[in-house]
Amino acid sequence: MIVIYVFSGITILRSDEVAVILRWGRLVGDTPALQEHGPGLLFAFPKPIDQVVRVQVKHVWELPIDVLNSAGGYYQEQGLDPVSQGYAVTGDHNIVHVQVVARYRVRDTAEWAFYGPKAEDVLRVELTAAMVRSLGEMGVDRVLADGRKDLIATATRHAQAGLDAAHSGLELSSLELTRLAPPAALAGAFDAVQSAFIGAQTKKNQAQAFAQSAIPQAQAEADAAIQSAHGDAESVLAIAKGESKAFLALAREYHANPTVVRERLYRNALDRSIATAGDVRWVPPPSGSSYHGFRITLKPSPKSDDAEGEGTSDSINMGAPPPGSMEGDTE
Image 1: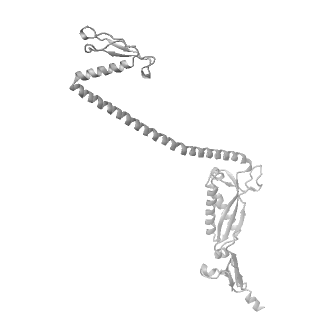
Image 2 (image 1 turned 90 degrees about the vertical axis):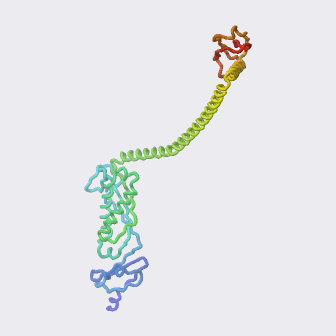
Image 3 (image 1 turned 180 degrees about the vertical axis):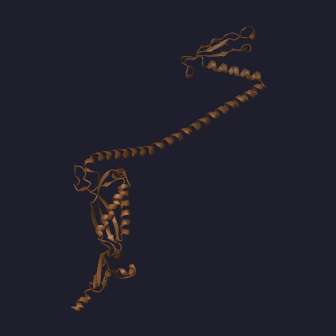
């Protein structure tokens, strides 16, 4: 019996287990490396001298937490009783019901075995406090719409800080929201607000997509118009420069030989005018070789292809042409 009692302290640890030894209620080992014992045979004194605490460090446990959930379930239509029903208040003073599932594992075996109280109790308290705090920092519209990821991240961070401060030795692996809803009596109003929010977001996305397609198109059209305007300006400027150079050349020629240039311009103007006339009547030269302000009125022929002269008449003031030149009215 003595031999059996002495060897009863031998423990076989599996591959996913870590153990610590409590001797007379104190941890054996001065450092975490000496306190924790890995898989294999573990030799310890028999009880009540030593107590071997085995922990599955690779196992992930699940714990549903419904402290902040309504006791009446999802379909309660009566008023909220704050004494018997769980709830949380958001940052804009709205009430929501929350139910979560926490997944956790043992990170520090020594703290979990010696300092921390029961794992489920401390996790439930810290996670409930973290969720209440996180919801109090957010508005209800954001919580029920696109802020769930931020809510989970914030609550996980606060809960882990509380677990570390309590020396629980636990680590949160994940946090899942299984229910996040307003009170049943207000569910319809919140659904309407949510639908309106989604509709507004959809319109906003459509407007942004239209702007992304319309703005480049407008910019391209503006660039094309600017390029076309530059081209027209260069064309008109080139024509103006050509006409200016021709006029200056004619002016220099006129100053050099005014009689010849005047005669040439006179005959060219008559040739162009008579060429568009349908009927020509010759008028003899006046006496004294002076017409005294006589005018030739040109009316385009109906068969004329000159569209610019249609429905108009041109007048040419006649000076004193040389003797024997042709003058007359044309129609």
